[in-house]
Image 1: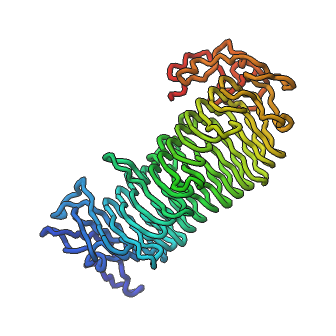
Image 2: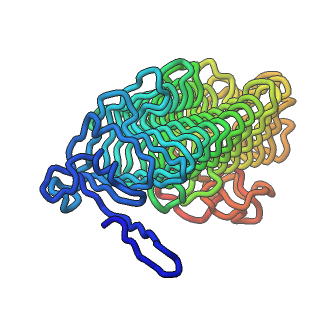
Image 3: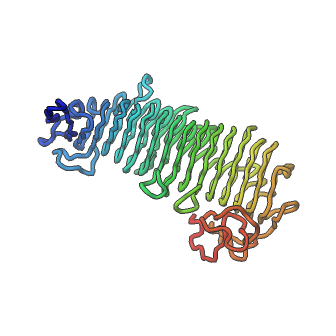
Length: 528
């Protein structure tokens, strides 16, 4: 029996509820013929195991308001688990799963394939899964795809709920007006070993957001705390790719806290649907703070790669398992775009083979500060209307320490400032670029270059020389310096390691540029 009554002389009747396992499927050994009957019978803490196959209609539109484990993939006789999933295919107005955890409940699902939710223009949260309240939803080894909603085509999480994603979960080809894959409102998300948007079997399966002001093709977060990847090299990576929206095609975060770090994680092949939008991989706005590391940010399209607005800020590459901490490659658009009173710190980052309007783009008349160290910017091509690799407008200040700017292609200058915009370049290398000058005309007063090795006239610059830095093999993308480089032991620096975590200094003084020379043979270079 489900409840066992024990009579006690002193305490009276005590009810002890034991969690049970219920099975659903067509076989004779299955306890229930349909999901709804099992769901109605189940008590808090019970487990429902559902046989493989496709469940549609009322069987695929479920309301859950108690703590349950729901597992798919049981064989048709409800005896053993298979490698298959259980398909909940709605093909009607969603959501497929509405999960109310307002009482602090915990719901865990695994082995499900959820699809077919349609948006009716009256319900804002009618996608694949809608979870709300102050409880928890755990999802593992499940696919959520081909659903539609106004908020969160794949998943909407709101009102303080905790969403945990893991175990080869995939969220793809969903559509909405805000948060194509996931919409988060005033809640918490943790994810690892998860794919949000994908390309498979020759088909683009990214999530999409419609409208000129749509945001968050992969994830849209408003007042949320989001942790992606969780640890540097434990658990599994998160891949956010092939998503589309007008702003923040990969991730849009407003007034939120975002942590994204795990070796093998990607923000790739995301695309702005509106070329006047911002942040093809990432857009941070409001008071958002983001900490990112161990990422590949590659092949994203249009306008800007990382856009930081309002008073938002981020730290890129603070710690990592395998430096360089972040690789930014083959994107189109400005790499870092700052507006409002935003700020950013970039450590140990490799920026190569991008096509853009500038590498760092500070715009607007509100104070912005950007600090970059131990980073390499190489083989990037700027479009013809760009005036500088590094651009600071009006009140923006850009500080670059031990940075290598090498073999980039642009028409005019390395540095460009307007108004009170300022650029400070200390202990770096500038060599092999096609720019005709170091500074845009009449901007010399706002640019300070010192302790560096550069290809341009060094008149008036402190401890700066015009000399070939002797890169190991720039033709193959290896921008390590050789032992006889003039950059070796060039100045007394302030950083304790280089872009590969090698200790600074190796000799009597620090080396200029991102690389501190070691008496080793670098066979792989930067592994481009």
